[in-house]
Amino acid sequence: MTTALTGKAAEHYQQFMEGLARRNPGEHEYHQAVGEVAQTIIPFVFDKPIYQDAQILERLTEPDRIIIFRVAWEDDNGNVRVNRGYRIQHSNAIGPYKGGLRFHKDVTLSTFKFLAFEQTFKNSLTSLPMGSAKGGADFNPKGKSDREAMRFCQAFMTELSRHIGHQTDVPAGDIGVGAREVSYMFGQHKRLSNEFTGVLTGKGLAFGGSLIRTEATGYGAVYMLQDMLKHAGQDVEGKTACVSGSGNVAQYAAEKFTQLGGKVLTMSDSGGFILDPDGIDAERLAYVQELKNVKRARISEYVKQYPNASYHEGQRPWSVPCDVALPCATQNEISEDEAQKLLDNGCMAVSEGANMPTVPEGINKFIGAKILYAPSKAANAGGVAVSGLEMTQNSMRLSWTRDELDQRLREIMSGIHAQCVEHGTDGDHVNYLNGANIAGFIKVADAMLAYGVL
Ligand code: NDP
Image (tube, rainbow, N blue to C red; front, side):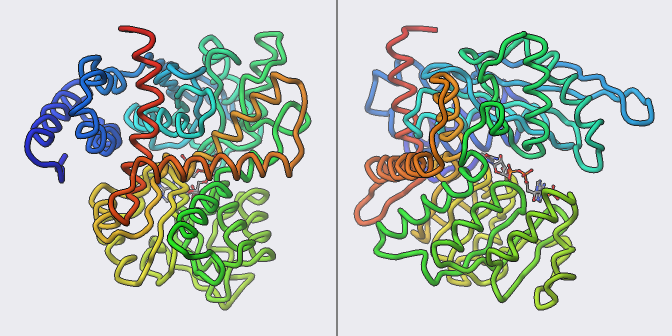
């Protein structure tokens, strides 16, 4: 990993990253996520022997526990299929393990380790008592019938249920795991344990789910953007945005951006992106939601309904001029060149709905240009925050109203913004990446110091 650090900090960083790469060979996404945090934390702890001597960063880059298991199930034709399941229980220093499940054909151990590591800082930033985890499987939900998804989810949960619990580890959804999958998994856990507890979040409203959870990640990313703009004396009103993805996070980021008076120009999926110069307003977004959530169809269908829009196969939206970028699809979806293109076209703010969507060289471009850049661990923490509120409601056996929850989400995102400003202000500029890393680190590190050597 290259670094902008100099002197002793750079030396320490190189040694640290070499050790990490040696112990975790070939896990490039994990190296990338740790490298990004280490660039902030190594100089931060340099004159703080209390953290250095306790080897906090070294301990935080070794997950508490890694669970890998076989998932065997039968497809609709009676064929036996085999997938690999994962759960990385990264840290329970500040609360039960907490983080989503991803079902995607390309996932590896590295994917889950990077996500679980990032989750540690994100959950800490929410100020709620949640540790960190992530998991899932290399199961491809695309094209599977409801029955196939059900059989897979039941087989997956049969093993995972041994390792989770409402005080131990509370999973949720992520890419490829939406309301359907969470429901099947919750049902299977309930059957196996003979207990109705809040062991998963993102549940249906009829069985312990929380209002606003579906919207929370996308709304939160836009609330973070709104706070950054306000801090810089600006507003969402009248701004244009490029959104990537058309799943859960993208849909609600687009909705909130539009509600606040902005215009969404693009959305995408893994096939390509659509550009609608008229703006993807509430009515058009409802059509996207029907396409993606009900018909499980491709975003390319959009142009049949709205012929003024264009479809760009195999491309990402970052060459379209916009004021704001909201990457909401997947990791490493903004390359260095695409980051430069966004800057060249006048983009002034990026709020990351997806996890680690910008490559490190792209992040350096954004930070070098001093635009408003909210890293995913801060910008997309709204989802897990409302999951935390779902856990609270389950424990209290009551449900808060939509307005109450939206208000709490709004306050949590403002709290995250304030922590970034407190720890990331450098002269007249806020480095939100440094701010998020340091604020997230301090809380977990202080808990670890209190426990002694574990
Ligand atoms: P969904 O499965 O609902 O949607 C994912 C979207 O991203 C789809 O449009 C999908 O397209 C696209 N996508 C997935 N993989 C790729 C790829 N390799 N290249 C291009 N496009 C891709 O997932 P979510 O909206 O829940 O998650 C999106 C991001 O947000 C992820 O990074 C996730 O970790 C992060 N996140 C989600 C949270 C949540 O609450 N859901 C919380 C915090 C972070 P296609 O349909 O073609 O696959």
